[in-house]
Length: 173
Picture 1 (cartoon, rainbow, N blue to C red):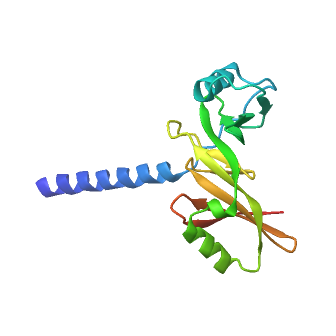
Picture 2 (cartoon, rainbow, N blue to C red; picture 1 turned 60 degrees about the horizontal axis):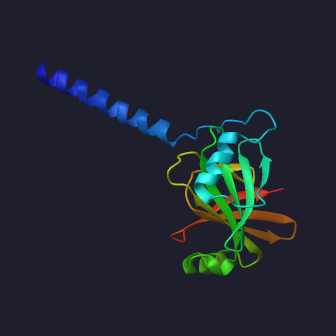
Picture 3 (cartoon, rainbow, N blue to C red; picture 1 turned 90 degrees about the vertical axis):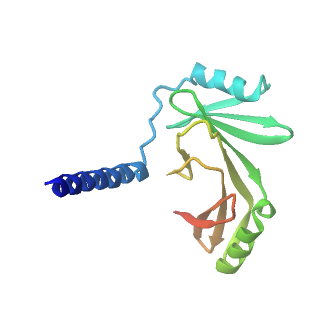
């Protein structure tokens, strides 16, 4: 009898672990923003994250309030979620800014493609668990580079993490 109880408890524990991991890996859809006005919470979060920067241009996208501004001579975009919390920034960098291993892999594996000179770097706000959307596709909130490659009329986007691992991200139409 003792063995049956222990075996049953082990099976239940294992099943709950599997179920927990399955739900963890599932993407949670981002909440859509309502209305056309920029959230005052997003504006407050911006000042807390970046200070009182002049000439900030705000736009509301379906999932984020976006602030475009210049800091240290670089144009940046900051993204704020439905709750006004800071999600992360994007900046333009060059292909040479990618980790060397990623540069080598892209040049070897995609040698028939033209590499766009502008690379997008997404710098995640590690204090916010919200995912991000680039090129119309949601991805996990982590620092990543995004490189556009072209071959004739075909355009693809690669995602590269800060360690230099290259992933296919999306084909653009």
